[in-house]
Amino acid sequence: QAEELTYFRGLDAVTLDGHNIILRSNIEIAEEVPIALREGAQGVGLFRTEFLYMKRKCVPSEDEQVEAYREIIESMAPHPVTIRTLDVGGDKLVSDIDLSDEANPAMGLRAIRFSLKEKILFKVQLRAILRASAHGKARILFPMITGVAEIKSCKNLLNEVKRELAEEGHAFDADIEIGIMIETPAAALVTELLAREVDFLSVGTNDLIQYCLAVDRGNEHVAYLYEPLHPAVLRALRMICRAAQQAGVMVGICGEMAADPLYTLVLLGLGFDEWSMNAPFISQVKRIIRQVYRPEAEQLVAELFELGSAPEAARRLAGEMNRRF
Ligand code: PEP
Ligand code: MG
Image (tube, rainbow, N blue to C red; front, side, top):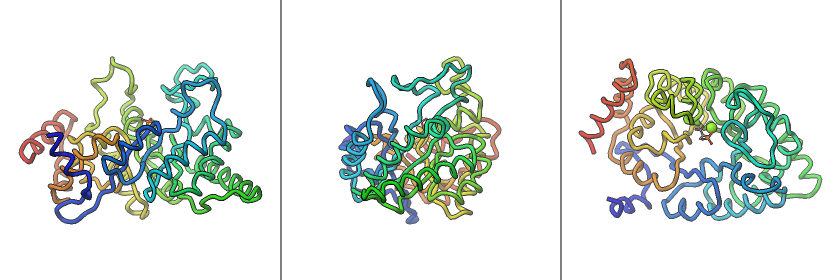
């Protein structure tokens, strides 16, 4: 079957009724770029930059970051590379960054909260992303957003950095697109407000499920409660997609749910525009997308909403998958 899947690499992810889905790759290190290209990824939908900061003595300098981002941006051109700003804290640790001991790190000084506190570090990263944006198409993605105020703070800093770079004579993409991760229940509830502030949204289901269901994503004792098809999760996803569509903003998904073929029909029916996943999964997902009519997926999603629990939804979905594929 692996051999047969390579057939899909050069094809579009288009449904039988002509609806196009953009499939991009998640990457953590530059070495994954050739795999993304081989698998036919239409750019990088999530570059987790914390890996640049990990396993080393000190945080990477601005120039070092520019080089790292530029290399990836140039290899992926003309496709975009979505660079997520540092998502440190919670379960993600960086040796040179001293995070205070927190009783609840997942709900503590994580991701954008850390960046907005450590503005010097944050500005270095924004400068590096902007400078690299002169070499192709880059997009900026802010993690763990819970409200409009955080986006405004990010945009103010970004504008400050743009002014500084312009004064210093650095080239950069002045219109660089900015997006946010929707991965907290707060963000899901106010997607409509957040969407007005940004160019695109990207749903991080790994965290969204964790926070929505109050289930630590890394805790094996409650792993049985970590259910992507939980009615609450499905409703959160539907709210996000509807709010994004009403605002006319592209909505993507970059959590692990996007990579699992079991959920492909669900995500298609919910209306996600851009899916980003580890590159080796792209062909499997594309193969399914190419064999369905979107209204069928929408109908299936409507049926799943009638069911009261994740296991029931999983059974219904597995039945549908077995019947069709
Ligand atoms: C997510 O939360 O779904 C996500 C893509 O981000 P990360 O897994 O890096 O937290
Ligand atoms: Mg996340």
